[in-house]
Amino acid sequence: MSLINRFSLTDSVAIITGAGKGIGRAIALAYAEAGAKVVCAARTLSDVEAVANQIKANGGDALAVACDVTCAQSRAALVQQTLDTFGKVTHLVNNAGGGGPNDPLQMPWQELDRLLHFNVTSVYHLIQLCIPHMRAAGGGNIINITSVAARYVQPNFSSYGTAKAALVHMTKLLSQDFAPEVRINAISPGPILTDALNKVMPDKVKDIMTKNTPLKRLGEVEDIAAAALYLASPASGWVSGKILDIDGGADVSVFPS
Image: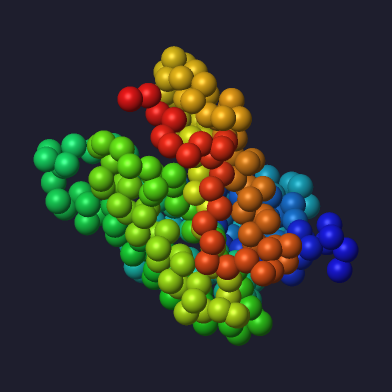
């Protein structure tokens, strides 16, 4: 196989959660460009329909599915719809998740439960659902999207940072359980310029973060999509249980203190 062909995803079927916008959308478009059939999942059906339609307009094959990853029935339905449409599952990108700063004395403990369920438990269950079908297809690949918040030690991030740190370690542990048939890795993005971030982050803050980043720019969604394509493709065939930091070279938080 030529080196460039090692980045092909031809004949694969990929489920991508949180695929309606931002990082998830960029990964869906990248996988489709590389030849995968892509199942775009998110809570808002119109968002993933737009992504699926763009893939089809570019000559690819895609399915839009409304899915709330916090709901077990919705997760199971997502996998079943994928099988009904494409006959197999070979790739899973667990991109849906989230959280933000918190005051540890003001935040109700139930909110930590919610964040752990959203970022960790839902991922665990989707992996459980997909693994048997990946094995039946001859192998598979899973990528979990975590965050640099998992390794930064900073105030007011005890809930989100804990949830993403749990996702990091779960990635490493599950990679041991399911090797060699299924490779499991994670991507840890730094600050990424999504539409959502642009709306809430003042230019002054973005300027400070850019200055604090060694590569002197904030991330683009395509930076994460390129990393996801590498980890999904045969190009990374000897890589599993690893966390790929895509953060502009930052070893500490670039957020203003």
